[in-house]
Image (cartoon, rainbow, N blue to C red; front, side, top):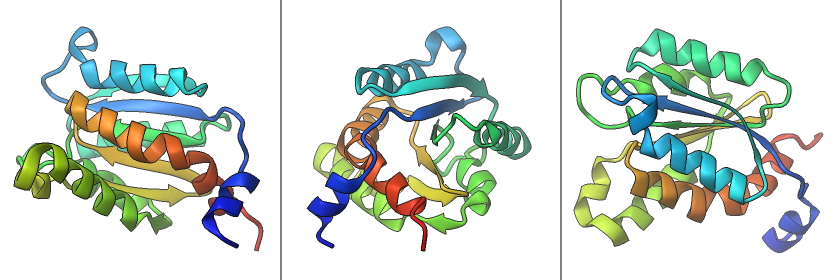
Amino acid sequence: MPVDEHRAAAQRSAFGFAVITASDTRTPEKDLSGALARQRLEAAGHRVLESILVRDDAGLLRAAVAEALAAKAVDAVVVTGGTGFAPRDVTIEALAPLFDKTIDGFGELFRRLSFDQIGPAAMLSRATAGITAGKAIFLVPGSPAAVDLALSALVLPEIAHLLGQARRAS
């Protein structure tokens, strides 16, 4: 089936999201990326069911994402921050093991689109995504520009199609 037909067949209702910011330095008042993610998701008609700030700690991040995924109403989790190369950046290592399947194209496309905005520094992004038990997890850099790019160009246009495919009976 062509991609346009897949999209047309995908569920078009609002989805439930959890937004988790991984940071040792931000406070809820200074979490511009988390606030932007909530705004973009809600403006697109989705529900933000949870929004929290978690320290850059693998165990805490894993627990927060597992708790979000356990909520029946949560369809997808967006984690901002902790995707770089600094020693405290542990988001990928903490959360990628939760994936049943990776969405390799997400990271590839994110870096390609980032290259258009920031040049070769885009190669420093380890943005990735995966599916766990029919739910999507997106791991994106913590800058507001990165969150905006990931949501506007990739997540929002394809979330219904992605979840429709992930939840399709064989």
